[in-house]
Amino acid sequence: MNMSYSTYPSEYDAMVGGFFVIFLFIALALALLGYIIMAVVYYITAKTNGLQEIAFMSWIPIVNIYVLFALVSDKETLEEIKKEALKWTLIYIGLLIVSFIPIIGFIASIAAMVIGIYYIYRLFYRWTGEQGMSILFVVLTFITGSIFLYIYGLIKMKKPFVV
Image (cartoon, rainbow, N blue to C red; front, side, top):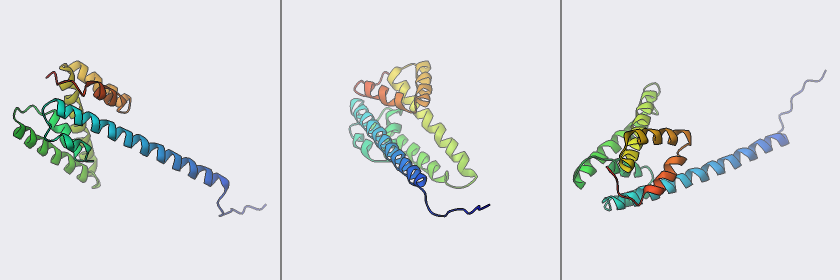
């Protein structure tokens, strides 16, 4: 009985590698599309609701989270809004950095996720003015893999906040 194993690659290896490359390109294209959609939503929503000064930050990767935090701020003046948005942006980025540390990184990841979900809820609340609808929209965003947020954001971006 000859049980020798070949160390040479087979055509199946090339096929699996090809599928992986195709999957990777599709995932990158979808991520880029999602980023562009959210940048447009943040940009136009910021301009519509009086945050023209920081609207351009919607297009800068990682920094665009600052615009989200500014959009949902409950402060009155632009300086207070900027200060609160900067505080939450630094906390959020700090949690994301700490999330790479073993053991405490798990807790930091959960905290960053909770902050992200809460601020998406606040964005929906500013658009709708209803707590129940906002919670439902967060759940729908989670179920649809953010597609609901993209579509609803594109619908509401040119309208001023209700709350």
